[in-house]
Image 1 (cartoon, rainbow, N blue to C red):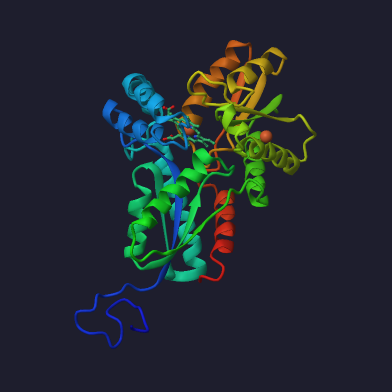
Image 2 (image 1 turned 90 degrees about the vertical axis):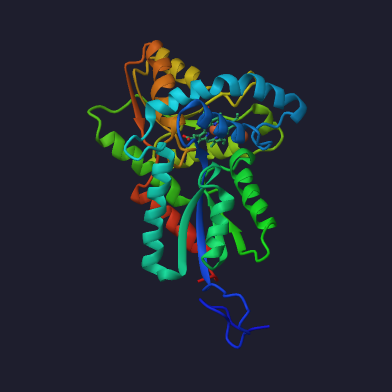
Length: 351
Ligand SMILES: C=CC1=C(C)c2cc3[nH]c(cc4nc(cc5[nH]c(cc1n2)c(C)c5CCC(=O)O)C(CCC(=O)O)=C4C)c(C)c3C=C
Ligand SMILES: [Fe+2]
Ligand SMILES: [Fe+2]
């Protein structure tokens, strides 16, 4: 045995002893994932990986596989490809989710480097698509990270997001001879800096408007209702998020409402559905609404396309006149403050 690891062969080791990397700590930000391009095959590859995940689709495999392969993967890639095409970042030839996640990573890295120096390596990965979770954990380990903080960027916990991100990380660890010590970051919808960041984004958006909206709507990604009945806390975390945001803004009850978007398939999902909710607001005389999407840490196809197109159209079709979308927290300084604060707690004892 040799008593030291470092950037080269350990002290007193024989010549054929493998070189050992310097000890570092890794931070890996994780988001859902995104296709590499909007063509049929790129979309199909991404959707196939995503919709084959049994954390996302809980139906029995014998039932779901034929539906997925015969119906969904033959039609959805074109439909979703068109949605991604409408929001694609052509400058970098990538989806906005990847652009934003990279910007978040660079800013978090700069903050942690300023405090802790070069002993920390910050990177990002995706649960589906590229860069994959497994490849990034391996890369951090190859760089000498024998401790990794794994940070799923989902404010509200769901088995369909947080748990499957963690599962994928642990699948990689199962393959490794020298596993890093590993910490997963919990959901953070209760974190005061999260409510603060959301509240500031609302205040900023309201200040930039020439008139105050008649209602503020928090639209969250939906889930099949039966997942809630089986114990997924996501629904409650969404309502908690809305309440903490409203309290942070100092607004009375009812001033911020909650709804759920992105319904997929014929089953009942969490209600109220965003399209119905905004239409009902318009019919109730709320002519001007503002909408934010607190379940998304980065703007993506679900916010830029679905909210700004489908949900906006539902509002206008019901008589609504003005619809303002408030962007996600993305790489805003308040969001990076929150991530830095959470990471500094998670890094305790490691640096
Ligand atoms: C089919 C079931 C789905 C569940 C359950 C689900 C949960 C869920 N998803 C997010 C966040 C995102 N989802 C995104 C895209 C997306 N989601 C589904 C389906 C389910 N999501 C599909 C099929 C897609 C792809 C787009 C499409 O075909 O409609 C994204 C955007 C990714 C991007 O590249 O922009 C995010 C982010 C949450 C938070 C969640 C449950 C809590
Ligand atoms: Fe989704
Ligand atoms: Fe609930």
